[in-house]
Image (cartoon, chains in turn green, brown):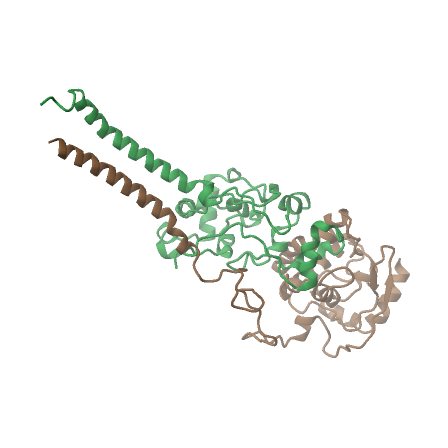
Length: 219
Length: 244
């Protein structure tokens, strides 16, 4: 009976072992990239809202402070979505009859909330509190990006655990003075490493062990 | 021999397929825990008739320690305020209805005005008031420049002589085209803003500061204030007209 495999098949067999490892590695790499892709994280995804509210106009052009609308960001877990009355503080006079704002007026008239689409949707198993981050010197733009340049708000970061941990492992690299929290033009390079360190001490940041402990975020 | 090789490669394929399958599963099953049945803030809920997951407090609820007995602090009104009294009003060039008598408003800020309070007032003023009233309170904020009707300036004798309670009352209940800010600004912050408005008034009128006609920026000089308190309602309108 003739040989079923040619002598060269030995080499093919050896090469295939290497190939499997490379292929496996590639598949794993593809998996990590797909998990981090905006397809799964909704990063950079602009959502259709009932009224296409522009942060670029209200924050960037008009200079309205974040806290004018997000009133509870310093005191509560949720930053707060403004009630329709906050819109009407200005829009009872400005653009008061444009069809574009009809959903806002209808909401005010009928006492029905506007059904905004949630842009930043943390998983149910993650605990998050805005007030503690603000109190410890994390600025709005550190997580939310250049909101003042976003006609439609999108998620600037993946909101994945590795992203949270990048800061929880080394918070000094991301904090800023209390007075600059709402400053959209603040850059991390505005502080030297020494200044950051003393700022971290001033804020009394908790230890790295505590900040990266499971129950800090999963409670 | 050949058979076992075939079996081996079959196994490889199976293991590979299993691995792929596990990866696929690990992406799919995370959404169960991602979207837990608990209700997040602002979420919709079909459990309640109004469709809101967040519940309003039942009417008349008093939280522990928040009976709000201190009427002057929580309303800015005098103890014996008359709810039926008519305030005197005038109309200015921009069509604003201006109050020129303040019979029910308390004269002084009912809490100590410290440097911290003024700083807090400045910060809150810049968040909530500056958009319309402008950085120094002359009514030229960004929203006004965009076409909102101009509010009256703080820097005339009418408002320099207005009691502190008037500013608090306008923030709390709104006036004219201005909506109530009671739900956006806590009570103590509203008084801090009043203190900062007094500081702004002093900054734009340094000559009048502390004089007979001008009011001090803060309530530090309480004894002096007391004597002014009586009959302010009648005086204010007259002063405003005379000095202009």
